Length: 424
RNA sequence: GGAAAGAUGGCAGAGCGGUCGAAUGCGGCGGUCUUGAAAACCGUUGACCUGCGAGGGUCCGGGGGUUCGAAUCCCUCUCUUUCCGCCA
Image 1: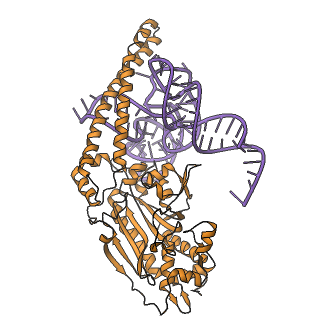
Image 2 (image 1 turned 180 degrees about the horizontal axis):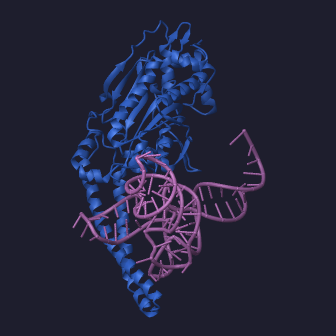
Image 3 (image 1 turned 120 degrees about the horizontal axis):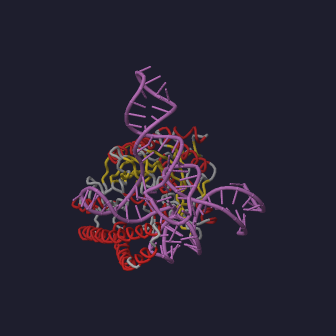
């Protein structure tokens, strides 16, 4: 959530930035928050005064008992009855205002960076860079789902049988390709200074709240109500939450982690042609990179992360472009997001394979992830993350783009991991 | 699944219901000494809310209760550890 203090000190700026995200009634919502804060502080001051008085009396009684003045002590006890009633009343009022204020703050999305383009939806995203050339496919080129069947490498029917739609079974060279991609991505991340994490695939509620999946996107996660756990939708959740309630020292920056995990998403309400084959799954593999950074450097780091992701796609030889997401398409928690889309030649469309975001202090505020600054004050860190990369659509593009009449030619960089150079 | 013990500051570890936000040790930071470093010595060192400030308030796993007063007593939840059982 946004920092109350920042909202108070930069009200106009926050309103302007939230408008980029098309937040309705921003002025009113911000005004309400500021008014509630004032109310809360007034109540606290009153309550604190009452408590201070009670503490003073309790201390006096203690002294009197020590001095053996029992009667005087007993007499003083009566003085607190009224104060206790006042305290209870004030505490209740304050708790109510607090809850209201907190609910309003938490329901407010992150404010986009001032340079984020305005826009309604994905159609208004801006292509900021384009790399590689789209291949000319041979006559009779197939979409990846048909290639999967032809070479018997991904079996969607078997997945349906043992689990359900959206849970494919990888077989033979298809399985090996998954493993190779994960290894390749992790090795590349390690070489770039990211420390590898292998996280749990289930998290508790506090973690879901920390990174912002809860409470607003609850329906997107698979839940295990019996144990109070959620299947992770991305490794971002466990990895970022490693630092929940942590105060780091500035010399640790940047804290860089990479982790492979299976990702579980209910994808409620998304059906149709976009979900064909590997395009959209309920379970998929992904290597995620997460960075915790000093606020002054987080946008430089965002560029570093983009370079890393771009480097992976370069090595794989896939044509891709980078989109700067507009206010209408950017996520609830993000201040700035770049999407990487690869060209899937047989489907003739762009597939999102990575989303790299700076959350500024939005997650850190919920998580209480702070650092001790050189001025001795504790301040909120910035958190960033990105996919590097999500496997299924990479596989789709590899299969489609590199198909030949003799089989699918694997990129050079994967061959040491694969042990073969062609799927046939 | 059964039984027991426990949860205190960055860590370790004390804490008769009344100057306990909390002894002590380690670690961290500053200083003295030193050519430099180590050692030694001295000092300092939790977080949060609130107030211009002086100050006030909250926090000893979470929640509730008893009391004039709770880290200390009671209830409850969660978690951890150990033993047994089961088991990759």
